[in-house]
Image (cartoon, rainbow, N blue to C red; front, side, top):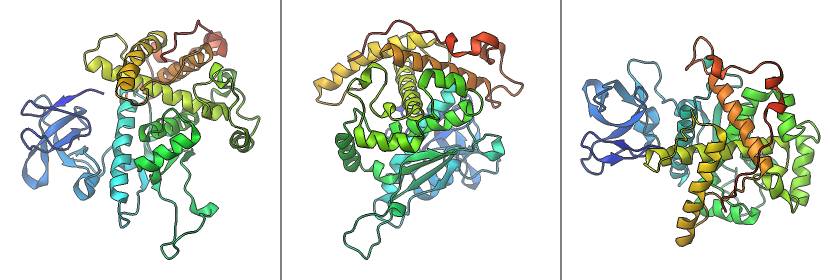
Length: 385
């Protein structure tokens, strides 16, 4: 993640909607893809404060009405919702105290996800954009009747965070820091964050977009057979027996052991974690030629672990959780290599970037090179813990 600048010269950040130095309103301009000062003009519209852009903008409807967004839409245009909010199918019930604040936290994390996807050039969209499955978000709460002081929540009243056919559902309880931390401790997770949920669930989305019905055999060679056992059987076994004691020899997390689909999603989320940290490090001046669009995977992993060792020590010195808790054993590195290849192929399929098709460097390899053997095992990279 990069930093930005208000027209007054003050450094501002991706989540900001107000410059604390000069009081100017800020927003994300979709034309120059920057956080900019919003210069008021006639008709309730704004001029992008980036002197190299100057686009005419309107605030996202969720910025105007609820102040849970800081993005803008280009004018003229038909959209009243920004390029993040337009994917929402369900938002929390705002008549319930505290739900607006939870929605704000969810949207903040979701915008970080869209920044990652934009930097990587991955395709996503609605049916109108020609994306199958179309991407959608539901932010829901468990249904608890207000007339009953206490009772168990029935199966149909509990909201499960997950993904199904492009629809990502997140229980808004995850936006409650105390509730989320309790679950993290109960499940023995190294991390449990809102951005982590988004990065994991979008991994399931990209399995549908980039693997399903197209590259399943090669994916099976890396992650295992997703058809056997069934997901339902694997889920039941996992919550009954837990992960094997030696899970770290082959998986990035205990949850990844549950089923190949979860292994894929956990590996995808780790890849996005890595890409985000490397992007921030590069823009913050920590050096390293590891920009996510151009770098090869092995230098990315090596640099991520180098940063991880330092960041972990910073956090340990403050009594905080490790930033990079993962151990990159050979099996995990192979999975990240496969994810990296999929990301490149996905970028090549993004018609918004390549309307005439991918350049040769991003095209699907043919013949033997497209088989799983092309992702050859390599020596392990030293662990970051």
